[in-house]
Image 1 (cartoon, rainbow, N blue to C red):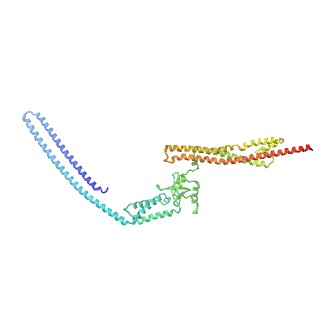
Image 2: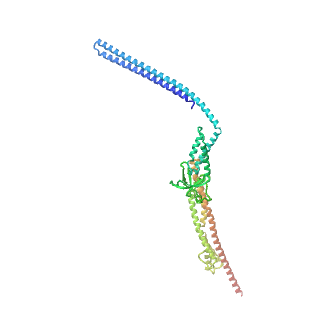
Image 3: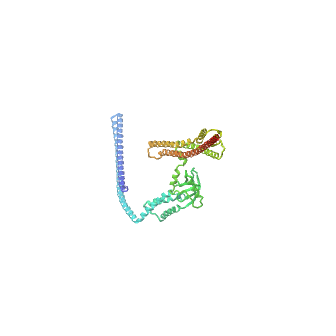
Length: 495
């Protein structure tokens, strides 16, 4: 672009000259137009004279009129000729002036071309001399530019900038000055860069507290005591903060991590300088942002959709039934244990009611008593095992409903793939989350229900076994008594 500059001057001068000649031609055409108009007016004058001649009375009058008209026309022609000659001279003078200006412009163009060529040679020589004089300093300045740029990007995300603002401006100016060849770094600027690096390293190992304005999660601004943990985290009032370099503000995280991480912030503030456990983010906020984005328990359940809520409702019903059965079986078991220690039958427990069969039917034979006792036990078994089958059904149905949610979620996922493709994984995340969460909820409900059913069924069977054992004992006792009485009768008859 620089080498074409004289050619542009020459073309500009030539274009100006052509425009001037064009203007002169237009002026000449204008003069000829004026002359033609003058001749037209003369013709009109002649026609006027002819018209006057027609009005003449005698030949002498006509002759006088013609003579006067010729004299007038001759004067007008002479005036027009002199005017045309004057304008021709004027145009020639203008043409001479433009030619003179063109010649001067061409001379100037040649001089500028020569000056441009000389300046290019001087610039190349000076650039070569500068490179030779810089030597190893040129590599040093390149390293300084790179270090200042890297440090600036580090300061953008460093929480230390919340306490020490304004460090990035110097680094930006220093990097720009190192990128230009017209300015060299001074000793003061190099020492300032070293100082900023040393200060960043020193502050990274300190836990300090300072006061500054904090933007709360609801948008309000408040001056608060902010605790900086090295170059990793900012905390205030038991909550994590973030530093925004674009606006230079410190803002409270809209969502905070779980309570076990928040508890460590309070411990750090109240430690009084002593060693304490703290949930530190060594990445400067990356891990913390991921923890904040992780859904909590309620959000996990919401991802399951209606199927997830149905599973939880069924699980709650099963849990209530299991709780009622557990309390009932524990109370019945305690009453049975008391009945085992007592010889008096009581009607408030299954064993007592079974024992009352013998007391109410003392003269029954052994076979009839056995049937009566079996009937009494059969009446007690449904009371002991009622609603346990429902718990077992819930333990089987819950994972099946979870499987239904899995299929529904996968259908939604494939529909999203059909409509939008696989370019954005977020479009498929909803269906996949529903598929996985419903499966998890189904298993979470089913697994405890299986253990609860097994435990409650075991307690119920233990009570039934006690009833059967006692019933067998009563039958054996009754048979022994009958056998003893029969033997006594036979002995009396023999005597």
